[in-house]
Structures are given as structure tokens and as C-alpha cells.
Image (cartoon, rainbow, N blue to C red; front, side, top):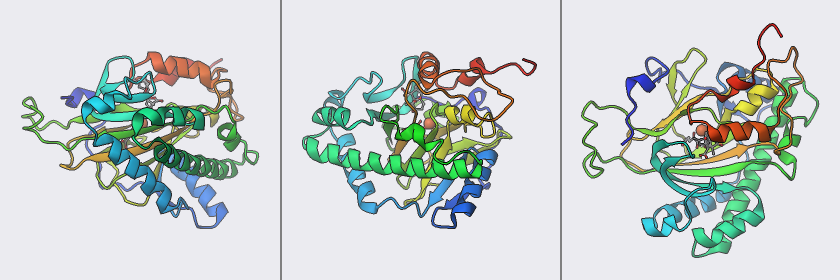
Length: 326
Ligand SMILES: C=C1C[C@]23C[C@@]1(O)CC[C@H]2[C@@]12CC[C@H](O)[C@@](C)(C(=O)O1)[C@H]2[C@@H]3C(=O)O
Ligand SMILES: O=C(O)CCC(=O)C(=O)O
Ligand SMILES: [Fe+2]
């Protein structure tokens, strides 16, 4: 059991009543661009409606996900351990972080997906079609969001989305399953203080942006600039967008990556989340057009190496900051 002791909370109370920005992508382009920029400046996070992703793309992907997670443990383990891709249970990354979840982490290139499908499903073609379809929709949506951001930030057209369109982009895809919480059946004897159980510990995503979709079960919390903890209600048709570390660097801190976590015991139902992490190629420089520069010069590949040697909750970007008077 992974209980969140008060020492792990970087925030005070849960400000559940604060509502996070909700952006309607079908509105006027200029309005959407400005709202996205404002949401990223204020929260590093927003919810997206009228995003244009067809229902059948989402439902085919979800069907495969439910099929996979309902297999017996020994079958799922054939797709693991994660290195970092593959099936994992409770252990997150290589440095001892634990959570109350199981997950699959996948590459996004179609060749890798079809290879992995062989161990993920008894119908590998159906599995790989569903994943490829979902990932293409996420890539398109990611580029659309980044184009709006570039417009709102008055950057050259496509200057952010070209990082994701690059054939060598390093985007990845994670599906998390937080099993239903049952205090007794889990042998959960040390939770008598009613401590929240951590499904996925507090962290920032390292990439440019993350596009998340969850089923209708809650648990996600984000930390606002003032370090207030905000519970994000689940929604069956919306996506959530998170600013990641790479975008913090590219915008020279105009946007800050959003710290977030998932509590596992807020419901007796299974929670599923599907996370598309949009990342540039390993060779891409993260240098910002905004001056004066707050970060050293480094590539996504250099940053990623640091990420994988660190603990989940570490503030990894601090290592790349330029001191104020340089
Ligand atoms: C503990 C870790 C897991 C992680 C790599 C890391 O060393 C630190 C960042 C973690 C994270 C968080 C966001 C994504 O879920 C993820 C895939 C990523 O890119 O960075 C995970 C990594 C992982 O699970 O391997
Ligand atoms: O399950 C969620 O909604 C968030 C998971 C998460 O933060 C991650 O996979 O990086
Ligand atoms: Fe995350």
C-alpha cells in the first residue's frame, strides 16, 4: 500500500471547488488561442471540449484496454517488465517509485506497436489498428493545440507543432489502470488513519504536452501556482491537457509544467487513464525564442537521460536553470 503521508503533500488543503479552465475548440480560432495561452499561464492545465476526436476511435481503444487489463496477471506479465516500454505493475520507472496501479507504456511508431501487439492481444491486428488509430488522432490533436499556442504566443506558424510532426519524434503512450479500492481484500491494514492512497505520485510530465483521457472515475489532482491542490472531476467526453517540462523550457517559463498526482481510493470503481505524451526528437534543441534565456542549451535527449535517472517527484529542470545574473 502506498499511503500519502502529510509529508508528501506539497500543498495545503484540497481546493476542490476551484474549477479549471474548460476550452471549447469549436470557437473562433483567435479566441481559442488566447484562452489556451491564459490557461497555460494560470494553471499549466486545461480541459478540452469539442476537440473533434471521433467517438469510435476512443471506444475501439478503450475496448482493447479493458480486454488487456481483465486478463489474468500471468498473461499480462508476458508483456513486461517495462524497460521502459511494456506492462508494469506498481513499480513506476527504475528508481523505486511505487503506485497503486498497473499500466502499459508504449512507443508511438507503428512498427513498434505491431510488434508489441503480439504479446498484448490474442487479436494483434485489431489491437494494433486501435492503438495506431488513437495515436494518430492524438498526434493531430496535439499539433492543433500547439498551433493555437504558437498563435497565442505570437510565435511563427507551426513552430511548436513541427516538433511533434517530426518523423523521429519521441512521443509515447501510457495507459494506467487503478484497480477498485477495497480496503479489506487488498490486505490494507495500515490505512486506519484514512490516508489517501497514492495511485500515481506527485510529478510533472517531462514532455511538451500530455493529452489525457479517463473513464468516468475521479482521482486526478493538480497543483496550482499557489500550490493549492485542485481535484479535477472526470468527464466522459473531454480531454485534459497538461503543460510538460519541455514546454516550460520552450516558453522560457511563461508556462510552468503542472504538478499532478492520482489518488487511488476515491472510488470503488476501476479508473482507466490514457496518456499521450507529445515529445520532440531526441536531437531537438529545447532553446526558447523568448529572452533573456532562463535555461542552458540542451536537447530533449539530454533532458530525458536526466529524467530516467531521477525519482518521479524530483524537480529535474532546476539542474538546467541559468542563474539570474549570468
Ligand atoms: C520514476 C520515473 C518514471 C518516469 C521516468 C522517471 O524516472 C521520472 C518521470 C516518470 C514519467 C512521468 C510521466 C510519464 O508517465 C513517464 C512515461 C515519463 O516520461 O516520465 C514516466 C516515466 C516512466 O514511467 O517510465
Ligand atoms: O492517471 C492519470 O490521470 C494521470 C497519470 C499520470 O500522471 C501519468 O501517467 O503520467
Ligand atoms: Fe503525469
